[in-house]
Picture 1 (tube, rainbow, N blue to C red):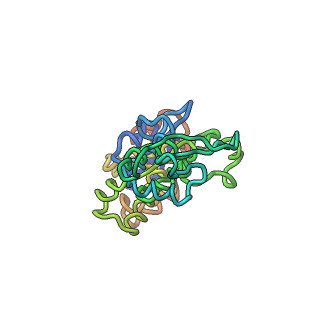
Picture 2 (picture 1 turned 45 degrees about the vertical axis):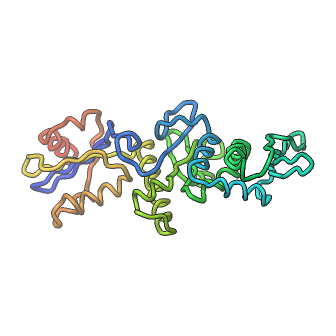
Length: 289
């Protein structure tokens, strides 16, 4: 598909970019995108087997042992306990099996808590379920869900597609996470503050929006001719067609020619990317005849 407009001495051509760069592999990104899907290769390359492995690593790398231990000791974890057995002189980690409705011993540590702090911390991270790991990791990291909508084309969003996309209850679901670590935020913004976290979250969402445009085919390029000579071209624009038109009008066209983007005509064939100025002018003349 190619859209063409002529207003002497300018000829503007906007077309789909059928060889777009992948923003997750060809650009530098702030966030890390970990996805799992049986049919599609999505997001960034990673070695996490599942969400649990990702959350464990984030907690281990960014949350202190004291924070995790205090979280469990205070009873915030519904299915994991850390208790002191006075009769045995041991610290016991126990987990609750919802199927059998029974508590099970997971690990035992003789002696004082301080002497076993690191081992208890690591064992708790291995035992805690994903919702608790997510809460702990989110204290330092920004972690957003990635939802995929697979219906005639692919779309990705940090929000749910339920209620805003046709058949989303069957054709959508979570496929991963995009996240930024404290180190990422310090490198980008220089400090960890509520303001930098807010900026980091907005940046992660914008990266998902760009990737959504790539997945859904909202990728464009344009050529601008003046007196038959190509004076400007650009490829790899990711965004809506209307945004593409606005950007070209404001950045590439003289003010008195910006209305060209409102008078584009579609040229429907398979070779428009390779047509030259004369070919495009012929197409316009045929449509006006």
